[in-house]
Amino acid sequence: MTKIDDEFDLLKRMRAEVPARQDLSGVEHRLAELRARRRPVNPRRHRLPRLRWGLALAAACVVGVGGWQLTRGGAEQGARPAVAHRPATTTAPATVLERAALAAASTMAAEPSPDQWFYRQQTQHMSGGDLPTYESWHKLDGTRTAIRTEGGKLKVTAAERGPTHPGKTMAELRRLPTDPDALLRHFRSLPRELTPLSICAPACPAGTEQDVKAFGAIGWYLSYGPLVPPDTAAGMYRALAKIPNVRIEQNATDGDGRTGIGVVLDLGEAGKGSYILDPEDYHYLGLTVVRGEDTSAMSVLSAGIVDEPGQLP
Image (tube, rainbow, N blue to C red; front, side):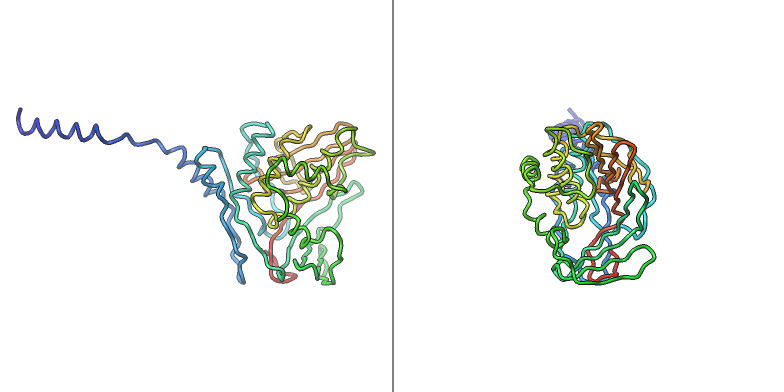
């Protein structure tokens, strides 16, 4: 055997000892998709809240599940344009809401200080007519509130010491369990219904009352966007999938005409409530309720944490 043959044989043996390269194209594609969809955090020109990364981003890449990034605040002022809907691969509630859960878990958690303010811009579309778009600021220590209606001036007053002040809501959110079954048990046992719009009229069908209470509470808390811890939001989406009579409606619209994914609790003639989720990152857009010929809706156009009333995220 010649020297060239010896070298060729050695080269073949060396190549045989090198393991074949794993095909990571699927994982790389998912990671790139997640990074591309991650909602950017709005730059702050003042003190930044402390943030932490959720671990579900890496988990979503490992299992190959399509993900996103849920932005919890920082939408631009004013109504958002309708979002082009990208249909989910399935309408099964468990599958769609698991995507939403993975998206929620991969967000950054805000840890606002008591001297900061929670901002939210909302619309209300009632069966008797639309109400003006309004903005609210609530100091998280519970002492001050500011309101500005469409075309009006900013009014700052002492906060009402009611049960739904965002500072109190934030404390409640941090005490909630993250396990979906534990969340359902908690919400079903609440002494009162938490929802801005009641689904059933004149009453809920027998046996559905606790489910309606849980469905309403989940939407109530999700509407506080940036105040909801990522793991808690993920648990809420998974809990929604466990509620009987919940289904997914593609190309649903909120009260402001934005197209999204509807998470619908359908109770037949008694009423139907739908949470509209953004089709790109699954964050909460709003609630619509249909009872007979009447339709009511409430939408969250923007939400975030700021340092003073009148400031936008």
